[in-house]
Image (cartoon, rainbow, N blue to C red; front, side, top):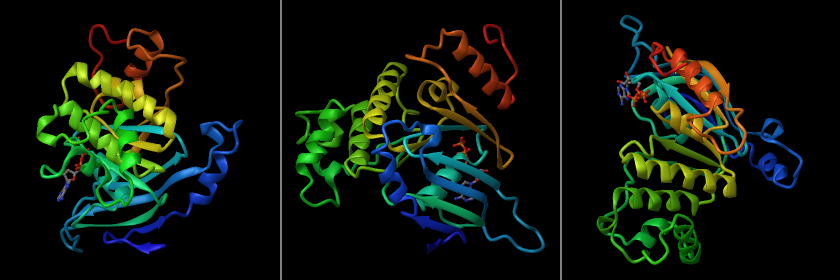
Length: 275
Ligand SMILES: Nc1ncnc2c1ncn2[C@@H]1O[C@H](COP(=O)(O)OP(=O)(O)OP(=O)(O)O)[C@@H](O)[C@H]1O
């Protein structure tokens, strides 16, 4: 158990043994897999709260469990605290105070909207940065994201979508038990975004990390996630399992029903064409 700068109790690696156990149990489903992430009564406040003015907390008591191999997407209005929650799991937040418990596995990778590649390092070096003897694995992951042969390219020679592919390869080379993604496709054009959805689904099916995806895009959440949660007024107001069979199409009635539920939870009034 480690002290956390924001006053949290963070337990890293506490669930690793259980995670290893489930991979040998072929009959298990996500529903009965052990927890990869446990968040209990998480409160987060920016700035230093004083007794007199008392800053308003951004998170007011968030409870969330993500199971091994489960893909959870989080939606919420702008400023509702989605990134604050993600940063608390990543241990990346500053100038915050709070309370609560966060249990995360040992190996956590984070992907952001911008790829955050080092411009002076070639693609393969970006992927393996900080790891020793990882070139073969790095090449393998680059091939998985469709960038075989681009190992010696500089980041500036890649398109935005290709840079995000490198960012995904860099996160996967660390074999994360938890992948945190903060609007990773937010800056991409619609067609590239659809390709990236397919790629991410394939990668997650192969590597089975637990995933927390922050997104503004309701359809993206339904397309990718096993469960969508909505953050509202500092708490999770809805857990919605995505129980769609096979390939998910926005044209399916089941998809449209989930979209309507989520838009309602987000306070978006129904419009023509949305049931
Ligand atoms: N470093 C910080 N210092 C002070 N306040 C912050 C800081 N980071 C975020 N906030 C505030 O906390 C609230 C939640 O921010 P957060 O980025 O978590 O929301 P979000 O739901 O991810 O928003 P968006 O969808 O617009 O990205 C906002 O009101 C924001 O202004």
